Image 1 (spheres, one colour):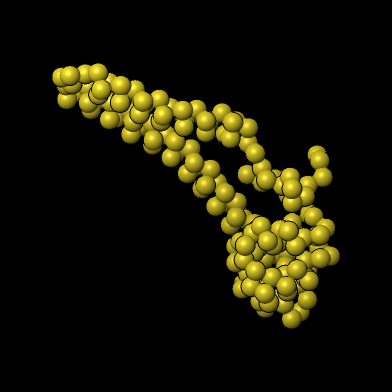
Image 2: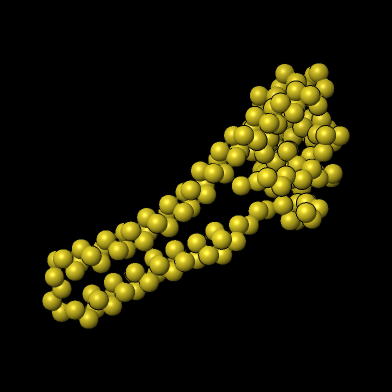
Length: 153
């Protein structure tokens, strides 16, 4: 595997990002365009045809939403697991004065600090808590010695 760093750590799932997402977006657009053509060219549209058109649009939007929610839910579960793993790691690595503050870290802080090497974690953890840095990108950019996470969702 390639060395991981801030610039390349984001995970792209080709089947999702380049196939499922675009196909579902195209499906929503196709259904809306088709519906507008049907409505524009039909002088007397039946209630059943109108229902089919409306349902096809709703189903296409629901499928798109389902795909993105499935991804969002998986990332949420991943963040909870990272929170647990990092709290256990902090018990081992943080100095005595910081250990009681482990539960002050937000999920965003823990998720971002997971990339810090064991050696630099205590210093970065203190800095993040004292400066109340909470933006994931800002915390990740503070990491000098990147600890790769190749098991991301």
